[in-house]
Length: 243
Length: 271
Image (tube, rainbow over all chains, first blue to last red; front, side):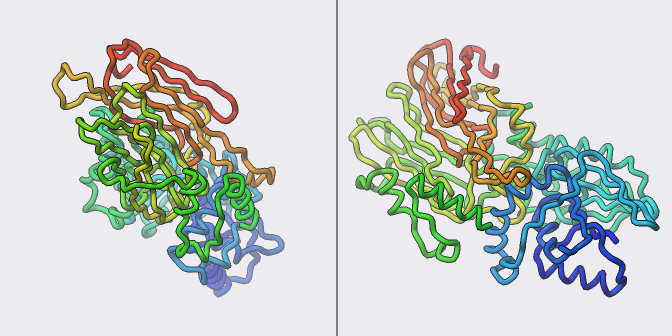
């Protein structure tokens, strides 16, 4: 058995473990984290056991070391001590720098580590048997994409990602969808954001103004747009300034 | 987590700052202690008519929060702003930057980007030529979600180390106006030194730009004494009045002793 991402709290991880155990008693050999954001790794503690290896991008331990304490404080504020105090940061020990295949017996999982895109520790898992791609947060549907790595890197990654011969994708946020059609909206959003911050930078506009208007055309298409778009614009602008 | 807390406490102690456990955090106001530590308890006057501070109400990206400091002195005021100190009260290192304004450069606006770790007051303290301190403040909510005051692409930041860019922007004033709006960018990771390397179990040493001097020819325009609250790739956008100099110069120093220098022809903005 392999588990991919563990949820945003120890309780969430325990619920996931219970759901797994309702279906099978096979040992969990691998817990794979698709990147270091708290909603994907805070449940890791529920899976710590003899014989279970934690797997992640070679940059993930550093990302967790750098950001983990801040995430704990931040999520404690948002979600409360009851949920967050029990959370332990569990970094991966089986690290992927490029690709790695995990053989589960009846199926093989092809893991691939990517250069900074959504984050600096993005990892995808392709189940070759069912042609299912577990894309982590490299793929968002419905929930506006969140850019915490490199906007140019992410768009570059999408070009390679879409050549993976999957039939369906399990995105980091949103419903299981057809592949690679599932990428269309995200790509359109990222391209609009990139074009807008480039235009703003060229005109000499200050960073604070892009937060309000970059990618505004995308607002109707996404959930949580107002929670994340300004942030994406700020981060993208500071990247584009160096072009 | 324990190690992190202990490290914060240690750093706070080194900086003369009182560390407070998270539970008591909200009730405790660090400002009086900061006035003592940073300003030796000098009297603070209301800065409402002297210095403005603008930040977004919510830190969208914890690593890149824009802040603008603006002089509110009227052009006829005989006093001038000598320096502005930017304090992010609840950051691990609250003193984000101290800006010294060149006596003849008439800098009236400075924008930069900072890290914001917490829900916090942010103070701007201007010292005027009358020797008095004037304070204004704003409040910033920490970002939600998975944003963190850390590097997004640490390798790229390292690759940019020491690169500098200077840019001038068109202003609304008449073309003959000598008011300029300019921006200086310095490639630097500006590491905080607050994190442990998971692999080596050693703390990543702090590594940041601690001094930046900007001059037109050799006449001071603006200088910054910076800390770890300044965002990666320190970025200053500011106004100044040209003295007719042909060269704009920048010299930056970091905590590892690197010195980065560059200069630009002000007649060819954007280069």
